[in-house]
Structure formats: C-alpha cells, structure tokens
Image (cartoon, rainbow, N blue to C red):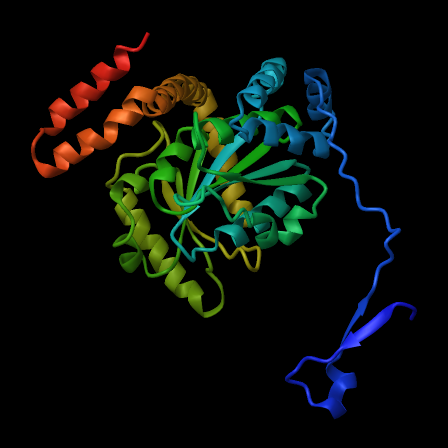
Length: 366
C-alpha cells in the first residue's frame, strides 16, 4: 500500500519482524482536519414535544439538561418540566435496593424484561455514587443490563448522585417526571446499596423492595433495622438449584423478623418472597404483589397521601440544599472558615461559638 511503512519494536528478533511489525500509514498534508460543529440548542417547545412523542434522543437530552448544574440549563429544564406537569404522576414508582452481591442488576433486567413483555413501558433509573474526589460516576448500568437496554419498550438511565442543588433529590425526581411524561408507566429506581441513599429513594417511590441472599442470620448482621422498616417486600434472590432449600429457610426467618417490625406502609404487611432472577422464577409473583399493594393503598388513600407528603418533603430538601450551597459559597465565609476551623481544632474556640460566628458572617451580607 502506498505510504504504508512498518516498524519493528526493539525487543523483536529481526527474523520474526513480519510477525510483530507494526504498520502505519503516512497521511498527506492535504487531508482536511475534522471540524467540530456546535449542536444547536433546542427550544423549550422542542424538548416538550420530543418528550411527549417519546423521542428517545430528545428524552436523553432533556435528562442531561435536568442533571446539569449550570444556571442557564437549570432555567430551561424547569420551563420544560412546568410544561410537562399535566403528564406526570401516572406511573408506578418502585425502589429496589439490596446488599452487595444480591443480584440487583440481574433482577432488574429479568423483572424489567417481564414487564415489557406484558405490555408495560419500563424506565430504569440507577443512582450511581459520585466520587468525593473527582465528582465522577461509573454509570455502568447499561453494560450490566444489555438485554433490557436493547428492548424497545425499556429505557435505562444511570444518574450520578453528586452535584449541587438537590443531588439525588432533584435529579432523580425530575428524571422520573420526564420518563413519566414520555409514557413510561413503570419506573424502577435502583440504589447503590444499603446506606443513606435508601432513605432518599424511599422518599420518592411508591413501593420499596429489598433484595437479599440466603443465610438470613448472617445477612441481617449487615442490615440496619431502620432499612428493614423502609421495605414493602423482602425478596430472597438466587433461589435456584441447590440453593433453593436455603432460600426457603431464609424466607421463613425473614417473615418471623418482619412480623415484629413496624410496616413501612400503613395497612400493608411486609413479607418475604423468593425468586431466581437468573431463571426467571418468582418474577411474576413479585409483580402480582406490587399490583396488590397499589390496589390496596389506593383504596385506603395511603397511595395518594404518600405522594403528597413526598412532594412536600421535596420542597424542604431543596431549600436545605440551596441554603447549604449558598452558605459555603459565600466569599466571607470561605475566607474565614479555615481560620475558625483551626481555632476549634487547636481548642481555642468552642464549636458552638464558631458556628454562631460563621452564621453571623453569612447573615450580615448585603
């Protein structure tokens, strides 16, 4: 080939050059460099119409807009959401958590595929932890749910949990609203594991499900009672083959424990179930349980009451996030904070007086 040359690395013997030589092609000077064209920004109307028509490209762009912390993007995102408000709130919102290794991704893929085949449209929102050092997230859920990601009735969107003004509270809630407006009637919110994010996700879903493994006694050592009290169902996954007898024993033990705990939802008894996400066994039973839950809570009024409380809690969480961001970004506070920190650490100033001094500095701004 014209312009092609080969290079033999130093560590390769000369007689084996053909086996290990690296080929490269010399480009001509006349080759024109690539030109990057800035994408035209969409109008609020284009975003609204695209989401309502379930244009997946525009839906993904609208979610990116919601996740942005840039003031300009946030303003446009709020205009889009206000236009879409009449079309949200019609889905079943399901939170899914679990101990590490419980098979959350495998379960969600099996459960989501089952729902899609039943005629539902499923959106999976996975809350990925953001690095405290770089602020980045792995966002690898599409690679862990390849089959579901390719399904035409499914939409998977990993969401970073970090960021300013709201974090999980704002980004995941508003992403959920966009998916509902696009016609997805089942929203699955996956948490990162047993921890603080469970309490946050519980406050934005209707039904909260916890996946566990067999060996209930050992698992319970790592599960806080508070998280057990958040759940509407406990599911022992991997109940297949030789592990099935252990799963049934774990189910019995969990039911005994759940009997003495306060239920997460008034009028609903939390129970344990078994399933095999790998084989697809028990998935339909879990969906029937969720449907029964929705029917029961809607009849009692608990379903709508919980949604109203969640909206109210969202207001207060946003206010708290705003005040925290505003406080620590205040120039005078940023300047004085290191000095006051050193005073507290060295023992020359009490914590209470240090906090009062900082708040006084913050409130004295013009």
